[in-house]
Image 1 (cartoon, one colour):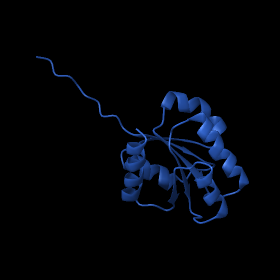
Image 2: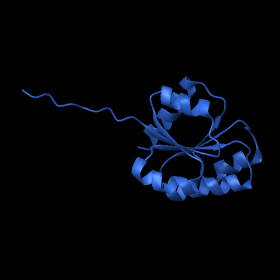
Image 3: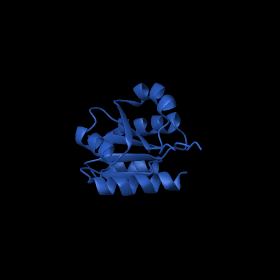
Length: 128
């Protein structure tokens, strides 16, 4: 009798931002997520179709008006995929605007692995 092999599907996360935080990227991988990074939405376009992320995290180091454009490009690139804005500048006006423009959640950096897992798992579960 043959046994079927079952593969566990790991949650795929795409991190977008100039000079993504290596510690944050590593924490995602250590938590068991399949993660890739891109420095801009323009460079992420060809990756998103091949990778098919369950979640996109837009890393904002210095929030500015152009970051809202990045968020909008991500929404166009992957409709229906939850988008989290990760920043070390919580409460900033642009971060609040990001929520108004469709960011699913805000993640304050630095963040511990346990919190990453809870946020990611909750978002992926609620978005199918």
